[in-house]
Image (cartoon, rainbow, N blue to C red; front, side):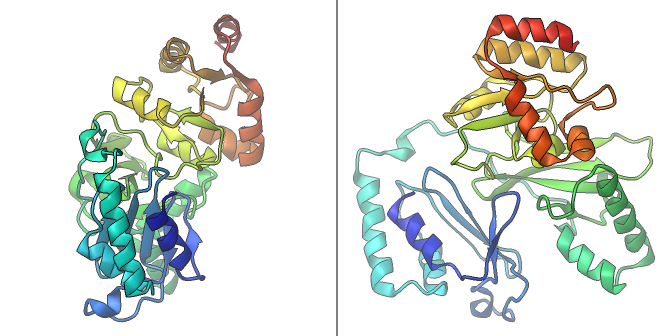
Length: 337
């Protein structure tokens, strides 16, 4: 954590909370300066990364600001710092500090960064919390009310709480989005894609995903004090154990670089199917650990296990059965299959 990031974090309102996806949410201080009424529903969101990055997004008035170490303190970030009560003289000193970092030998802009461009979410996409407020007060249309009811039923059947992630929903008919639970994909605080999981009974495609190649889900939400990272195939799996997801069963070079870049023990938990076998082979090749928890024949993946046994038990069983020795991985692989 650098001086600028630390100053911002210590200046945030006391009444704040951290969401499962890594956002720090609080009443947005910017709205009254941008023609909106004062926020009382914690629509302000701040995301930080271990490399010093700070991203702020107001989900009420739309104000955005960001800071990346090695770059100047932007006008909007200085505005945001003023909004949260940081004195002007402190902001000026931090701006000078940012210039020093830019001129130092930490030349971030000269390094090869892995980055993903922003993507738009479907029309009329709003946080699930917003829909639930209207759902509980009966102010949705009959069609919307039924959809949210079915969405909640689906989450309950998976043993997942609606507050476990920043889930979203849209009533748009494009790609049958109105029948899907939306999971936004974040990178350095920006939305860079999403997946929509069908929660209605349908013959359509189960998942509709729009994301850049090489993306790893849930990187922004990683606990930097953890000495390990759990790698899963699907996003629901990652959400349930605060891990990351490769959004499939095969790891590409960019994903490997991102996961190795975390600098901690990597534990892969494959699904119990043929594609999961391929993932085990890749984990061996990369020198990663593989977990072989005994969850019973009716459990296909991490999310199923959490629904059956609970988060704490599943996490403990993953750590207990994680194997890094290649010969032992092969042995357990045969038993596992």
